[in-house]
Length: 347
Ligand SMILES: NC(=O)c1ccc[n+]([C@@H]2O[C@H](COP(=O)([O-])OP(=O)(O)OC[C@H]3O[C@@H](n4cnc5c(N)ncnc54)[C@H](OP(=O)(O)O)[C@@H]3O)[C@@H](O)[C@H]2O)c1
Image (cartoon, rainbow, N blue to C red; front, side, top):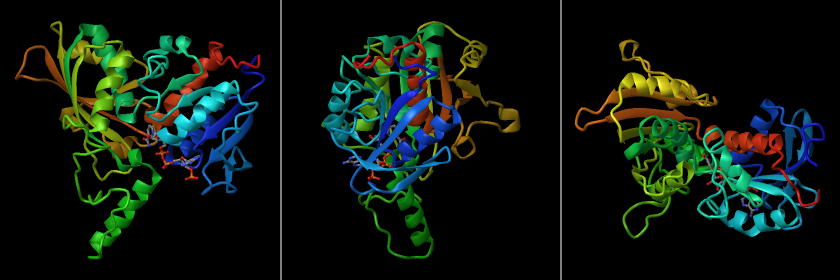
């Protein structure tokens, strides 16, 4: 039986990436009980050394045989690798918290934001999906507001940092910025023909036939699944901005019932995952640059939308690499451990 005392045999799939490195940071901060740690990546990083809690680990090449003896896998190596390797991990008895989009909409896979829909974890059959970072930070406030007065319609406009596109995108923003300021030619490898630097790009992930991008569709479908509201009226425009870390979202919420700003503030304040920064008189509101590296979902600019009854605007900001990926995955792992849901087939 895996428990707090014995510790967990843990593998991190994609350990050298943006999210993988955050996993290690969050696991160390939270002193997550680890018995053995295995770091997995592609051929490119296999053999490199990574430090965790003063100990050096050698990154190994991820294969279908990497999961023997593993209780828990935190996966963040992208959808293709998850589709290929996660079934092998489950077969060998591990529970997988997967950060890719591979299993999010699978009806047999719970899609969970810790603290919002923990009850869904009990239904897991070996895989738990972590939502898209944009959805993850939207869920704590929307869950509070749904419980408070019912969501009638939600309009989301995002301002997403480049770290959401991986480490290479962050490096590309730096290179592009330097080159533009020096009047040099600019390469667009990750950003394919659209510069991240000094730009605002209304295009994240690929376009589907209806004109929406896959990122926008993820926000719509994942929100409905997590909130258990399959018919929720929700729309999204997802935009990339030249910010390293921290996604911002302008959210317009129409409620079923009449509600005041005070009701909203009181309810949001009572939710442990949320912190309110909202004081126009002293020009205080959440900004990505200030909150990177921190855990809460920040809400500010809470104000009535005077163009429509029972409608309010909110500005929601969070560190996409933490709540949107590593922090949520580790919080899920903590609940699995606490509620004895980390049941390996070996036990
Ligand atoms: N960034 C976010 O805000 C965010 C939020 C939620 C979810 N996610 C999801 O998490 C995943 C990773 O994102 P990221 O930002 O960390 O990307 P990243 O920085 O590009 O890292 C990718 C990781 O996957 C590994 N990898 C690549 N190909 C592999 C292979 N064939 N076999 C084994 N490992 C392989 C890489 O190892 P090498 O070093 O060997 O290349 C690296 O460790 C994506 O699915 C993304 O959608 C990201």
